Image (cartoon, rainbow, N blue to C red; front, side, top):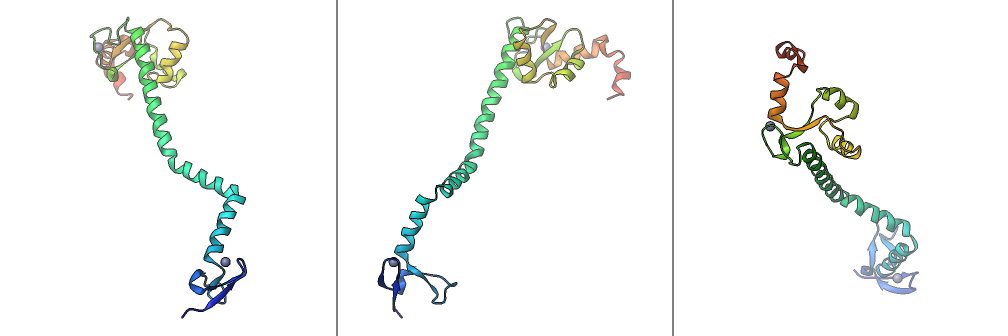
Length: 173
Ligand SMILES: [Zn+2]
Ligand SMILES: [Zn+2]
C-alpha cells in the first residue's frame, strides 16, 4: 500500500518507499526522504572533519601492523649489519672465528679475551646484542676482543681457568 508523505526538507510529496524505515518514529518512517537524508549525511561529513579524521585514524590503526613489520625487518637488517661490521673488525678483517674460521654469522659472537665478559655484559645489557656491537663501533673498537664461534667459545670456557674447576662451577647453574 503506497501512500504519499510530505518531506519538509525538500518540500515535496513522495511515495513512502522513498523514505527510510525508522521504528522510533510514530509513522514508522523517517520524516525526511532518502534523498534528503543522503544529502544531509554528505553535508555532515564536510562540516564535521573531526569525524573524518577519526575514520582516518582508524584506518591507520588497521594498517599499523604492516608498518611495524616493515620496521622490524629494518631493525633486523641493521642488527645483522652492525654485527657483521664489528665481527669483521675483531676477526682480523674476516667475519669469521679467529680460531677455526667458522664464518656463519649466526654462530659468531665476540669474546672478551681477558675473561671478564660477564661483568661487561651486565654493565652494557646484552653482551652479544646489536647494542653492544654498535657501542663498540661508536667508541672506536677498544682492544681485548676477538671474534669466536660458539664451539670455540665453549671450548675456551671449558679449558680456561677463568671458570676454575668446571665440575664444581657447573653445580651453580
Ligand atoms: Zn526530501
Ligand atoms: Zn671457531
